[in-house]
Image (cartoon, rainbow, N blue to C red; front, top):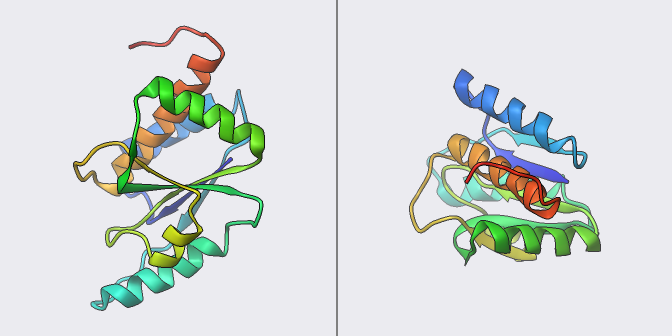
Length: 149
């Protein structure tokens, strides 16, 4: 499983949370975390194009790509767990979290599934922790292991 994120984590507390969830998830599967350098330009279209190409460079043809988008499908943790399990049985999963400008049209086109956690906007570094927590929760649900509600 891969997680591709635009931008580096600067806050130490978020870095620690990511490390903790990586450690927990690695008990169930191999997790590769890829950070793409965010682009600082005034031209949003160019930013999305450059970041999009960097993201696509890390996606293989056989990867099942799940992009995190406000417009994506919303599901509860149980449905996410079932979806995650079904997709994982088909092959490698790659989750993609875009940068502050969002995701490029070419990344959205490559996506097999758009997923949303909320109609609200979250800071991308914090969202990385939320996604990792839900991936961990997914494995706990699938294994019928206790985990706080």
